[in-house]
Length: 192
Image 1 (cartoon, helix red, strand yellow):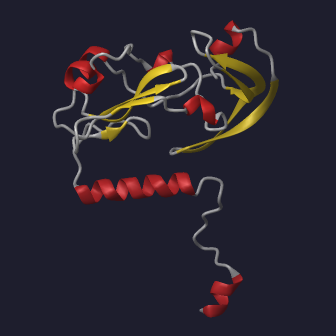
Image 2: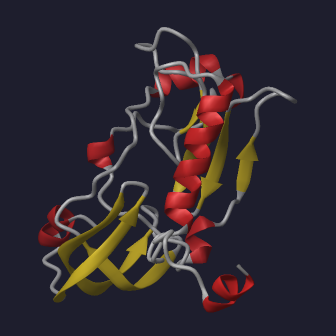
Image 3: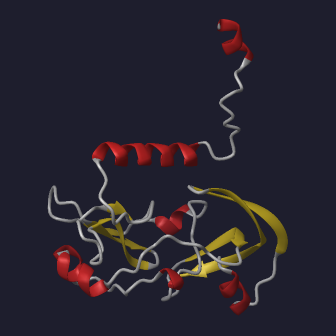
């Protein structure tokens, strides 16, 4: 949860240091731990979140998405009640420690074998996930996963892209593990 939302809700919590692990490495930041309940706008469902971690600022790599462009490009999304999205609008991330908040009531899939975004109806309404074609400002179309990494506007060879994705995967996978390549386990040293 963003610090700004926490202040508007007059939430209080226990301040402590957190190690935030991203693809860019580990950063230590001061935040707070609290608890809250989130509900759908119509009040049909509520979820208790304990703990909720409050960070001064949520640094997101999301790009703005135009509802009109999305719905005119992808006909399976044309009648969904969507809104234009900006990363500044995101004030809370709901993790998988609240699994029922991620329940799928309905799906809107692109035409068969066509890459494209998927409409998902959750307890909080409709959202769009998955592959979205390149942003208008990019010269060459290149597909990126908006939910995983930043959109890449420069073209790269498939081998170079594979290498970058492989390195990104291992950075995330090895977060918190001592990766000193000079250290060997006793059994490996013995075998040599």
